[in-house]
Image (tube, rainbow, N blue to C red; front, side, top):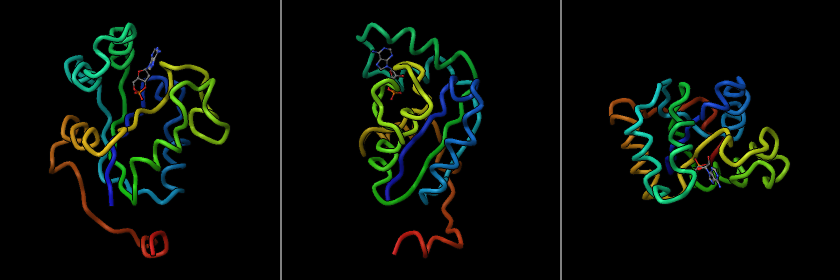
Length: 149
Ligand code: CMP
């Protein structure tokens, strides 16, 4: 089992797409182990996107991510990091394949609806940045035995 951090970005919130996107993750069988609504502190967003610090879009990206509340969540499942990134599609909605979340709902590279961790180390660091250990819940759901053999 693997965990990954996702963020419903301000565009997903303002476009009221959270429910429809979350349904896709639930339908896939991924388990929510943490979730909260927050207006992110600028310092938290700057740290989260530190790797992009030298990129020309970094400041705009930090402005965007603090412009409205977001929903941060942790999803769990087999190879959850790769599974979620495949479901999201390419960064830019214009290039994302039809059938992916960005391919179906987006047309932009900054307004790309959902962030997801891109590797095991980043997932661990991002989960630690956004969640306290006690905010993550371990549990099983009735259909779990029919989702993973
Ligand atoms: P995300 O997966 O959250 O990781 C970095 C974010 O930077 C990305 O999604 C986009 O929202 C944004 N981004 C990536 N490339 C560009 C770009 N060329 N111009 C503006 N924003 C970008």
